[in-house]
Image (cartoon, rainbow, N blue to C red; front, top):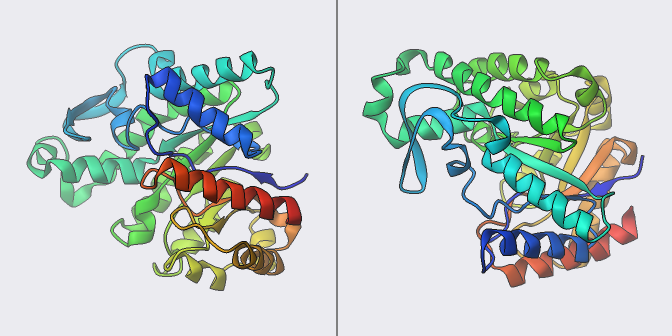
Length: 314
């Protein structure tokens, strides 16, 4: 199977109504030949999207825990990410582009739980014992699972985002146990068909034992960055032997999501990744992380460079 191009998830907020903004995000991705597109998270942030989970309350742009965390209040198809996925599919149908794959990003239970807990520490203490935070992580995991399953049933690809794993702020023993049980509950067919990926930005090398935990999880596609100051350290830990031994494919962040890079540098970075893991073990080419913090004009410049370079090397 050939390598596909994708984006990590978020885009800057485009002007107009939600429908108009999502249409603009879809058009930008199609114009630059992206194989696996997203809705660009135009409705909110990686945290605020999950305000429908029971036990959470919106505070500013974040969420806090006010009770035991559980499934969404309402039907699964009312979940914001599913509603917006259907908007993307409708846009694609109108363009006669039904063949384009769509990916939905989910903030994982470790990152989502940690950020919600830290938003209002006192409130969290009333519902979870922070000295044994695993119960909270498992509750977030169980709340997210039905939504992920529904998304897969609808035909979308799924990317689980766990950016806090590379910060060293999450206990790896807890992460291993929670994420193993999370991924093992997803149907084997979807895992085997590489419809599910795990994205961790930052330096994996900087957290001792983290790469081993990721390699041991029952998910086949690991999405890592290699372009940023921290992310470039990940080049030291990848190898063909390690990926094939652990039956993994790589989502390669071969281009910066922040800076407009020289195409020669980007091309050289890709070939260094290919040399280390083997072309056959690369599933996706994408930027290091999301575009949420950059301007629409810069996003287009990055995607233009990504298109030029990927057309040369795929």
